[in-house]
Image (cartoon, rainbow, N blue to C red; front, top):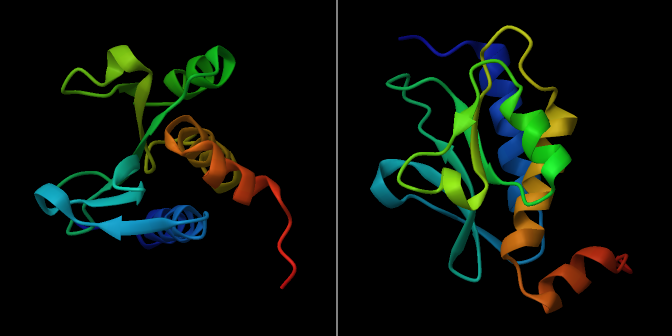
Amino acid sequence: MAVDRNVLKKWEKVRRFALGLPGATEEFPWGETVAEIDRKVFVFLGVTDGSHPLGVTVELKDETAHAHALASPGAAPAGYGLGGAGWVSVPLAAEGAPATELLCDWVEESYRAIASKRRISELDTPGDG
């Protein structure tokens, strides 16, 4: 399965946004890309080798955001029991898939659900450089 270049660009923008959050690191457990904060995953980004459709999986505690994400084309509660804890898998290639900006909002919400108060404070405090 070939990876659509426009979808890959969207995925890369979301990945860069996630890794730009305070203290975020990129890891590759199970062969897939994830962004972590303090060794806890806040977004699953999957694989880019074309073996699976590109998508993001985020934890959305806000009921409105959670419902909105689930209403996205092809979206579903995350597997492995994560769906019951508010995690949603959102494909990027589906017709009508969420815009990059909305995906980044969801990534930030997921980060806030996982990150420590200190990290959230870093996010909320404008940098001086």
